[in-house]
Image (tube, rainbow, N blue to C red; front, side, top):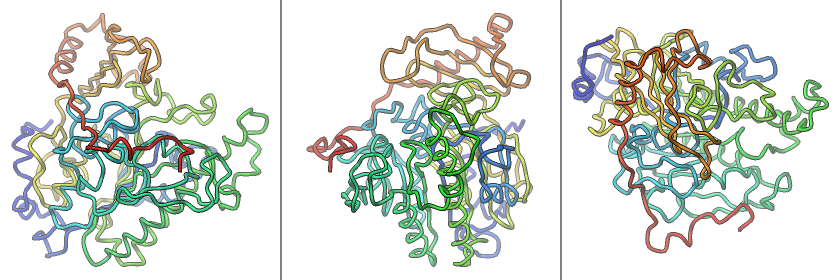
Length: 480
């Protein structure tokens, strides 16, 4: 483990240190190349084991498999939170759930006006910034909307419940409603499929900014939400006649879910093909990951979380372990598999170092550039002293292979949780399924981790509605 302190490491992340380290692609770096483009794709609730390269026998993900083969796959990448909005907040701010401002998931909780985000970081570095998909960190009329946090444009959904529908009456572009022709807002009765429109706008953004550095943030919604897609979609055609779901009471939804994963994989491939067409492939670093653990839909039919205990909403490994892959030709070695332990707060300092800027002082993340680029980074990979999560009465701390969890008695939803349950302790090096509670056997380790949890939590002051903002917010699926 490196002895470099976190603050000393962060102080060394400016453009001058990039020149010293000789990292490729950034302005002023080796070869005088322009700053690299960054494409960051989030696939909503895809499980750790749902890629076909992980041996899944039903899903087909050839394009993500190719990214894994041509880049680096992480075995211990963890979400910033166990549900949509909080995990996105940690990604965008570089702060863990004890510090970031969006810690719940009702849809209206928002970033604060003074929260500094990835969008603002890239904008200040001279990048074009676009987001396309599900925002989740502030509804219309709040301080948390993307147009107030560094994004030149954002097209899609702001409120994550709005994002449950793929045939909504409208989508949003920079806070303005864009009607979706022919849509009823009801399942399978629409005419304009939202993910197609979101994808098309993302491609348009990349084409329009091909001559300038850009940050393209793609928090796509499928396969989460309602399981619906056009019946003429080639991915639905691929799965409509499979027999492995025959007789299941949710047979159609099961096949639609598999088709939605294939559709998203297809669109990932289309993004990669576009980068090659525009001759941007070598100048673009691409991240693809899940946002949190899968929800174990259809009575765990697809076994998305494998041996991990728990699922979406829980701070067990099944709620936090995500697929993560990174590709940058010529800079990241192909076929690499890393067991480096990291999570969403690490994205901001990593991207800051890659583009040659200084991240904010108040972040909780650590750059993983040494892991991505090896010797080119010029230093050892710093490790977290601990990682921290909290959500609706739960707390969790990771310290190396040790995992401490304070669970809740009921399901972690917005009401009826009963916090204050005894802490549990697991050694993940021997017990990845978190079955053998070692709290009584190692009280010294557990007490140290509980102290970390107390240190990490700061009482929250979330964002707020602007004057008149509540009149703008999402009111329900079927409200035009």
